Image (tube, rainbow, N blue to C red; front, side):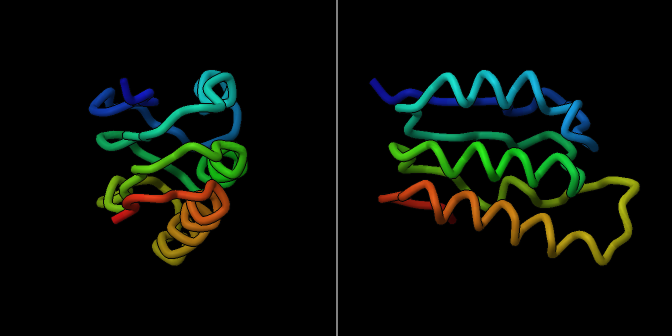
Length: 102
C-alpha cells in the first residue's frame, strides 16, 4: 500500500514556519512516504522553504505534483511566486522522486 502524506483540500493557510511546523513533524516522521498531496491550501514563501527542507529527507517519494501550488494566493508580493516553486522544486529534486512530479 502506498504511504501518502496529504493535506489535500483542508483550506489551510501557511505563511510562516510556525504555521506549517506541526505538519513538518508529521511528514518527517514518515521517511518511507511515497506520495505527497498538499493541494487546496495557501502557501507563503516562508512556509515553503522549511517544507522543501523536510522533503529533501523523504527518499521514497514517487509522486509529488508541482501543480499543487497553483494558484497560491497569499499576501506575499507577486515576485515571490516563482520563489515558492524554486524552493519546492529543490526539495522535490533532492528527494529522489522516481515516477512523477508534474
